[in-house]
Structure formats: C-alpha cells, structure tokens
Amino acid sequence: MNAGAIVAAQIAATQKAIMTELREAGATRRDTATAYQRPDGGKGKIFDGLIKHGLVEKTGKGHFFLTEKGRNKLDRQDNARYTVPLILLIAFSLCASAIALLVTLAD
Image: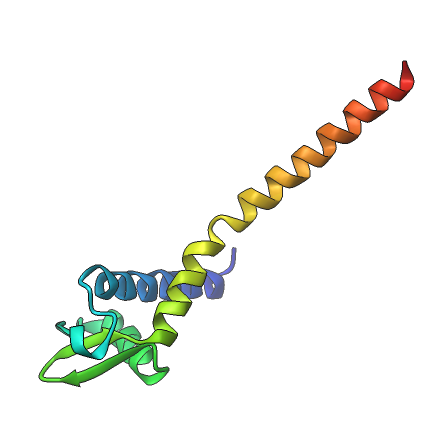
C-alpha cells in the first residue's frame, strides 16, 4: 500500500469518527444540534472539510449537526463493510454448489 492510500484511509477514518460522534450524540438535525469543539491540527482541517462539503453544518455558538448528506454517507460507509464478506460468501456458496453438482453428475 502506498503512502497516498494510507493517508486517504486515515482521512476517511477520521471523517467517519467525527460523523459517528455527532450521530451518537443525537445531532442529526438542526433542532438537535449539539455543542462540538472543533478539533486541533489535522483533525480540525478534516472537520472543516466536512462542513465545506455539506456533511456537517454549524447552527451557531459552536453547535453542529450531521446533515442528511452526511447521514447518507455514513450509512453507505457502514453498509460497505458488509459488502466484501457478502461477496465472498456468495462466491464460496457458488463454488460449493458447483462441486456438489459435479460430484453428483460424476456418479
């Protein structure tokens, strides 16, 4: 894995962590926005990017919430972690079925 891919993975993990914190705090709508301290350093820049891209929105006085766009992205990320194991399970099942069919036909 090259350095660029590692950095991209770290950024994605940080984005997910920030959005998950807001969702777990119940800050999923403007009226449920919660106080959130902007992180320092690189994590703060990532947080600023979430705001810039409309995934997180500020309501004022340090209150933030996860927008619908942010919730959708977080849901897609959560669902994506099941995709690879599911594909592998289907592939294994198809291989096992093919082997069983060949053994049956061979008899």
